[in-house]
Structures are given as structure tokens and as C-alpha cells.
Amino acid sequence: MELTLDSLKVTVIAEDSVPYESPLWGQHGISLLVEAEKDGLTKRIMVDVGQNFEALSHNMQILGIDPASIDALVLTHCHYDHTLGAAKLVEATGKKNFPVIAHPEIFRPHFINAPFLQHVGIMAGDEREEIEAKGGMLFLTSEPFQIMPGLITSGEIPRNTDFEDAGINLFTIYGDTVMPDPVLDDISLLANVKDKGIVIITGCSHAGIVNITEYALSLFPDEAVEGIIGGFHLVEASEEKISKTVDALGEIDPGWISSGHCTGFKAQVKLFEAFGERFEPLSSGKVFEI
Image (tube, rainbow, N blue to C red; front, side):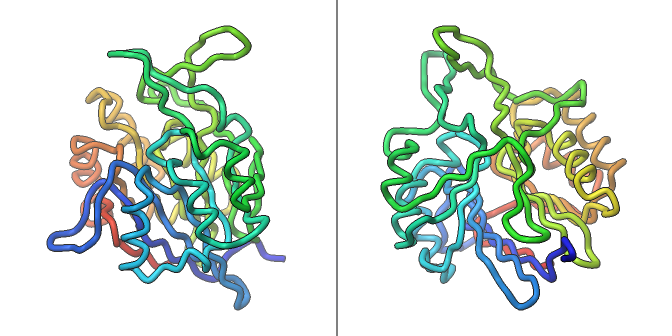
């Protein structure tokens, strides 16, 4: 079976910004609906749920997205602005054994301690037990995971660049030991579209968007990168890190890039300067058809 999709559609359900005069609501978070079609079969996969389920539901209603039409949920990492309301979304689908795909470490303790202790991972109400109680079936793996031929999650991303990091000082607890948390659970959704190439769909890119893109190319070695959608977590990055990131993406030469959420205005400006009309910022309601 050929490991390509025939077509792909991505709709931005939730994002930090909304278009001018739009009835959609913005929130600090991201949620994307991916519609993948192969051999006449179309499946709808939601990537992340943002942090405000009321706002997510509002946008879904305006965009004509029925929760019952969703076939699976991918959680790109543990952060609350991507996962808060995951159990409610599972419940809203009305389905049993509803696939929820994530990294095995997604439910770990995860926190910052400056300016004060704050848990920033999976929140109460979205624990493993709650997701399962609402009808979810968890598929937790650190390996690339096929959802359908031509559509996979990346699994854990190798950290190869010397200028990319998680973008924020985070911590976890293993046993009784407190240690820095590099967000190893950061995964992406990768679509290989026939006659187009790879479309990379990220949440926050804590693994580094260059690391993610290079790994995607290693998983589909005969393909080019058609496009990249999502957050790049450069909002607090140095000018040097932003420049190195943009330069490395320029060498990879994707067909187009659309980033937002945690990317940051400075990085968006640099991306626009480098890619011109091949770059556009994300916003709620934006639709990509490949």
C-alpha cells in the first residue's frame, strides 16, 4: 500500500489570534482539525484542544465541525494550553474506544518555579483515568505511529541542533528527584500527500522546529517539505536563535510556512522577511487544502 494521502485539509479551530471582524474567539492555545483522504476514505483528526473548551466549542459550531465527526485526537505535548478539555472533547464525540494518541510521558508532573511554583502540564479533569472514563482509548508511544497510510505521529524527536531547546525553563519529578524537563513528549503530526510532499503539523515545537523538520525528512526520505503549520515557541528566543532557526528552515526550503501561537512576533517578522508570500501567520478559521 502506498504510504501517501490523496489530499489533506487543515482547519485552525483555535489560535491566539482571530481575523479582522471575525465572530471566532481567540485563546492562548492551539487546536487544528486535520482531514486526511485516501482511496475515498476521509478521516478527521483533531490536533490539541487549546485551554478553553467553551471557546473551542464556540469556534467548532461556527466552523460547522460536529464533535461526533472527529475520529481521533492527537495531543502534541502535556501543556495545559494544548490539553485542557481533552476529556470533554472525547465525551462530546459520543464515541467509545475513541483513539487519543500521545507520548507515554504526557501525564508526568510538569511545572515551572519562577516567579512561583505553577503546574503547567495535564490538569485535573484530563488525567488518564478521566479520558478513559469518557470513552477514550489511549495510544501512548514514543515511536512514530501510523494513524492511516500517509499520516503518522512523529514520536519522540531527536535533538540534534546546537541552538534549539524547549524554549522555557521547565521541571519534572522522577521518583523523588526534581530535574529539568526537556519536554521529550513533544510530538508532531506528519502527512505525506501524493505529488506534494510532507506537511508538518506542530503544537509548540519544544523539540525545535528544525529538529522536527529534519526528522520528518528522515522518515520520508524521498519527499520534500510541502508545508509547516503550528507553533514554533520562539516567543522568548534570542535574536541569534531566531536567525539560526530561520536560516536552517531556508536551507530546507519548504513550500510554505504558517506559524503562530507561541512563535512570537519577532520570529514571524523574520520568517516573512525570509520566505515572503510563502509565509503567513496563523489565525483561527484559517484553512489549508493540499
